[in-house]
Amino acid sequence: MPKLPTGVPMQSEMYSAAAGVQSIVRAGESVTGEPIRFVGKETFVKLAAGDGALPISILEDVSPAHHGPPLHVHDFEEFFYILSGEFLFEVDGAQFRVGPGDFAHGPAGVPHAFQNITDQPAKMLIVVRPGGIENYFSELAACAMKDPGNIAALNAIAPKYGITVLGPPLAARGKQPPA
Image 1: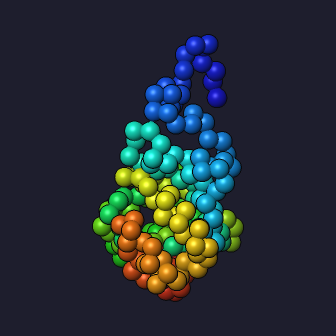
Image 2 (image 1 turned 30 degrees about the horizontal axis):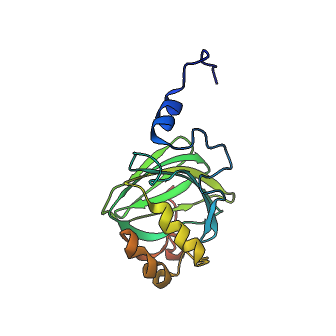
């Protein structure tokens, strides 16, 4: 990374100082301290919606092999930037594959799901607008939620966060990646 002249803050440092958020969140770190561990995966919160003036959350999602959330819908939108691995996405019934450097959008009010379709952990950066989904994930972790296919248990918590679980994960529905 190029070094800026002394006394010239980087744009993110200027924003961070003004908004009161942590200036740097290193790889493997989360503003929540530990990563949030729920439904068999880890999520690193890089920016929590409650921190500062931006109404977004930014998360680094680490999905185990062949893992993904159930089909769901919510009143906020999600943006997914794939860092490693390959994912199968289903958005409003249409399926597509994405890999490193690809970008996907989950519009508000549109049913969607995704699944890591590799034999290794895969990572993506998720931006949520408006933010706050990290609170849902924290509550799932506090309940020791381990099974992404337990729709009844997920829906016991989800409506509080504007989320409705509609069906099982892609893997449980036998969805195969398009060629």
